[in-house]
Length: 513
Ligand code: D5M
Ligand code: FE
Ligand code: ZN
Image 1 (cartoon, rainbow, N blue to C red):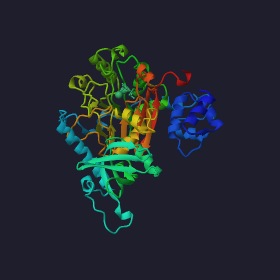
Image 2 (cartoon, protein in one colour):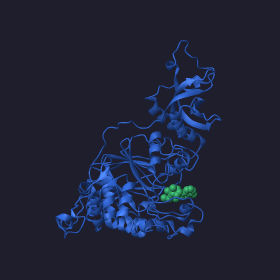
Image 3 (cartoon, protein in one colour):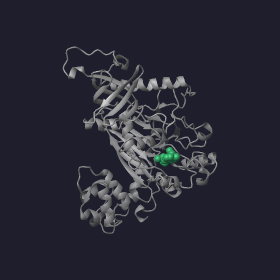
Image 4 (tube, rainbow, N blue to C red):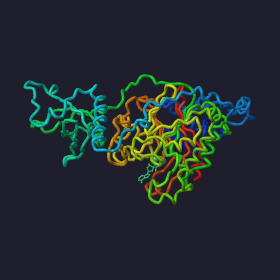
């Protein structure tokens, strides 16, 4: 790696870098991993990266000047002196499935069940808003019913309603009209184009999300003129995070069976899990791994899209599962693995998806716990909301600023709506269960999605948002629609510090392409 690449990567990560620090990185034996560690460890308040930041961020880093005969970048002797050994046993792990439809499904898809499903969604989401907004039923303000107080100042005449966004449009004068619906009726809301802050919020609203609107009724009582919009969201200051110890890794979209499955990189990941990576930093990490969470699309499946046969290396579905199960047998048995399905897996397509059938589960080793999609699990005491992420396609299409390149932008929008798939009837098929499993009820510590094949890690109001990328190289279809996957990267969370970093198992330097 040369100076220009380091400078470019630093600038992408938002840092400047001191020339002495650049020389240290050039001499590092594993420059890619050095950079990954560095950018994820250095405090964002740091403006210029200095040599001491490298020493602090990279475990076992030894300065070149201390011992010129030593392997540059790492204290190789110290690593070799401690023969590799896993730090945890399977018995120390505690995986609890908190919410999962798999054994509770009652849906047969009847009309009445949809009514009940949406009522549950409305009731639970409106309850979250009601603690902050004192609202009235829409019925009570329907034209002619609402009698304004006789003496009033401007403020006291404001009223609030909570409803699902049923329609959204823009008038010729650039005002926005939102029609809100609650179980008692529907009512139009006007967002004045002059209120730019409110227009900004309103323009990001999507169909079927539940919001509260506060404002004054128009003189004829026919429309609510909004002054405030309230989304369910999570509190600004969530109490301090639950944590544990050891490391959890997050992957998804393995797509075994696809011609584009990146076997070599995947096998490098398996070697890493087994403590066989040549990089001592990665060996140290491997020794600490206790959990692996997998968010769907573990195989490429069959009949998922037209003419998929042409893209398959393994054309038979059970052969695909046998192949992926064989890989899971090669993972260390002390790692507790949690696997949820995605839209390429052999389970029902409508969400919430039930977990894999027994014939498939039985192919896997005993250290795998299967759940549906979505599922809330706790690893020790740390809550993980797993969701494959099909709704991301809707969010990218309908919300300005949400992109495939930065997948956590979409996940943030899920949190604001406290719902994993707010819009009904677009890309996500929904099965009408008695309760809405896609609702984000319990606030998790980590939300883990996949599906869009791009990696991203960020934090929103103290919740870690992870999209775990893919192990499938760009497909012809993705090339056509300009989706650029970022494969073979593995987000990890240190459960003690709740710090995150992304491990990179790409064999061929992207810069060389
Ligand atoms: O989805 C991988 C990515 O490719 C995800 O962002 C959706 C996109 N994709 C896949 N199929 C389609 C179609 N038919 N239209 C639009 N976008 C699509 P995966 O679930 O792995 O196929
Ligand atoms: Fe996928
Ligand atoms: Zn998918």
